[in-house]
Length: 66
Image (cartoon, rainbow, N blue to C red):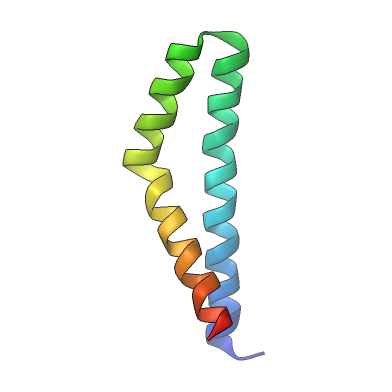
């Protein structure tokens, strides 16, 4: 496996891990606080963190298909 491929896989796993962590926080808030709090958390984390991880992950997946 080429070094750049290994880096891409590591980055993709990091992106996926961060997305999952953010969604688990949203789930916890849904279960333990309120729907409004969970929605706020989802929107906030998407704008400030998860969105870029999603974009990067999608780019990586698209590059795999090319």
